[in-house]
Length: 238
Length: 238
Image (tube, rainbow over all chains, first blue to last red; front, side, top):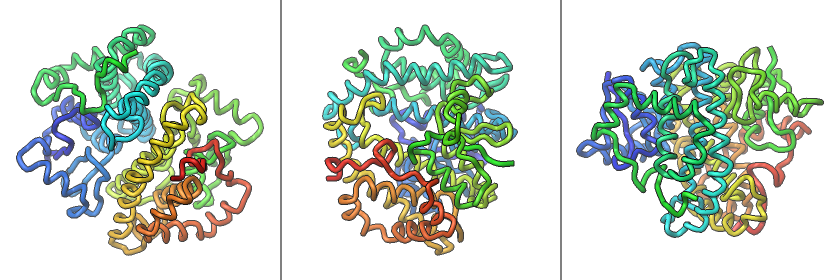
């Protein structure tokens, strides 16, 4: 049974964490909102008229009768099915915990350009964005990356990945965060990254996986742009 | 085997969502950081020196050898064990999805007083806080409450709760959000709440549960204050 995935068609955004998992696993899926009439279908699900468990917002996944929203929830569902998560309870909890910490980082990365309101244009909150981003790059990025660096370093398998010996969905998500932060803040990341060599290696190892690498080179991978979570505004890259 | 719960001892904060579940279930637990020497123990876990799966931040739960961080992850673990979540996969996914939407609301409620940085005092970001909060109260609170109102209204059991016929952990968390928003923004909530009668009823039903009611009247319930997520600053309550 194939997966129907729903997310805004023009951006990587929060949906990209799910797309990467589906692509790495070679899963049978459709990026449904990018197909003809897909946006209307997506909005009907969010309006809640067609299902008992409506999503608050995209992204969400339809699999049979099940509709699953929230990235960490979708990945918790897909992880064991796609061979991208441990199968035991303790391992699943640990993967979910790492993913929820990625979620927090993604929220803060989003707020660098929208610290006041998503209902206002970036141009209407540039001053606040500059104040927010300065603290984000000074304090928060090193704190998050330091945490994940430590997790990778202490992995008892010594694989350089976050969990166990293989690739799990939090590795894919962390790859996406590093790629996104490099896109948004190239100057700041050039200063910050040398402290986190494990994460640079993790990024490269994920980017080099045959399925991921084919995906990144395909037109299924929407390029980074200034509508998604990770946006490059030179005035913020202090 | 009793639960060891770790969170900052002086605030409700994000920990309160877990405390409410433990209390409603009458679980055998200790609020470990409030005990003698508890803060040092908590900080050792976060420093990552004592466990293979260190939390990024409190709150976290220790149960046997397992350390579980992130509120939605903790509640996903506790829910079926405490009789506060459906036991089937679809029901657990739906509970987790609702809880992750609560998490998003809580993050935004937090950002009303800290829109720029948690490393700065509120007093150093009052202007930004006023701009943020105006949009939060105008757009976001009605959007979140409208979503949960619809979920409660469409519950096929007609119980007025979010899921099924009984009390689940997202009900307890939504109660806490409503109580917190009323504390922080009494004037705005007096205007907003009449549109969401199901949620007011849900709040009252949860508050009246014997275990919750006993907890709220006890000194285990830390009062709302201006160090937690929900803070009352009259200048923000537009």
